[in-house]
Image (cartoon, rainbow, N blue to C red):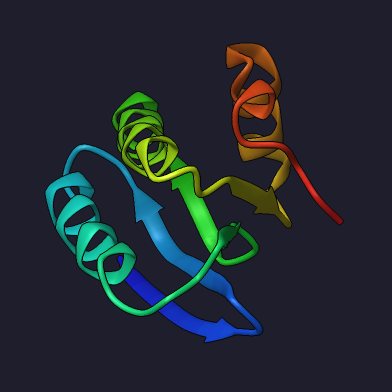
Length: 102
């Protein structure tokens, strides 16, 4: 699992690459927390175009980051989900808290 990030015009862009599952969740959690603690931004866009797989552990990682950023009033948006991720986000209602953007 690899994570790319950059800040542009007060927006933090994060690209998740690989598989977000039980094996990578600790690494992803730590790395996202580190990325989220640096720089000044007022919203986060998580790009899932390079995410190949996500299971329930991965959902937990995203919900945990959402809760941390909600305390700081920083919204998280999702873009470019795969069919698999799209299905998971719709079934679980994650788009209610992390809206999909185009």
